[in-house]
Image (cartoon, rainbow, N blue to C red):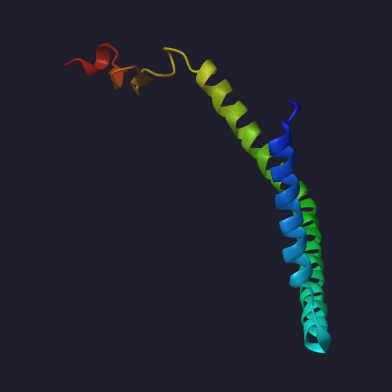
Length: 118
């Protein structure tokens, strides 16, 4: 941390003292101020408790859904593997009746065999 010169330190001390003075002025005075402070802390505590309970609830929901999501993703991966194996297995002989479609940078095009060129 760079060394602060004397004026900067004095300015920081003055700002801290002013902040401290404002904080002591806003302290609750009397029964009404104490009641407000108590209600503020109670509301803050209640909101914290509600937040923690909601967080735990959603955590438990996520944990409970994990097996279902895992099963769904496993099925999807099996389907993708089957599609990929089918794509690899299908050569020219199996694609005689259906033209093979390819994707290119410009768009998609089809390669037709000799039976489609009439």
